[in-house]
Amino acid sequence: MTAVALPTAPGAHAARPITLATTVQQSLTMAWRGLLKVRRTPEQLIDVTVQPILFTLMFAYLFGGAIAGDVHAYLPILIPGILVQTVITTSAVTGTQLREDMDKGVFDRFRSLPIARIAPLSGALIADMLRYVIATTLTLVMGYIMGWRPASFAGTVAAGLLVILCAWAISWVFAFLGVILRSASSVQGISFLVLFPLTFVSNAYVPASSLPDGLKSFVAVNPVTHVVTAVRSLTTGAGATGDVLVALLGAVIVVAIFAPLAVRSYMRKA
Image (cartoon, rainbow, N blue to C red; front, side):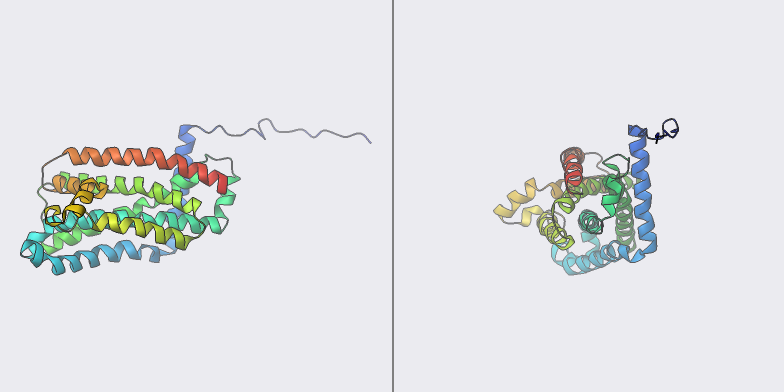
């Protein structure tokens, strides 16, 4: 019997070249998938909708009189601190959700597709920016309702964008943890074990000058301190101080280190 060769359509097996444009397009497609998940399960947003309101009210009335004499005088100190703490803490959810998707085998399917390696990860992180935007907006609105008045509208918008950028950069760290750790609960536990000292042992809620010398030294080198100080300078109209540049540079360095680590680990594990 003679084998008959069937005709093949030209380019049927040709892989689509992965360019920067296609990578961006595929990442946005994956981000849209993440947004659809949020629309179908809106309870995922409970933390970013309740936490900013709860923390602002709680810390304002607990510490306002003791630290600044009254709540109104404490708000210029508190709101930037709450903003940074809330949005950065929210970024830890990225690693937890990523680990859950990997445990369900979702990312195994993505890995078999002829798409950019970074697209599933970057898409998930882009979708999570919605959470940062919601947390940022609610914190600023809550502060305004309570009587906080920033000196510069443009500076406040810039401060919000800076915090969102820093949170997105830090989410690459938690994406890396989500890939290398073996359970979502371990990702969540380690994430908060790292974030809570960084956010609370800073100048977010109390002046660093009031702390003991040992803690004062830690606060001085704490990256969260620089972000909080940058937000305060922008909202008070002081403009782009050195802390703003430090925060931006730190975000770039974190992405440059942890984005390749997360993608490489994902390709080995998935």
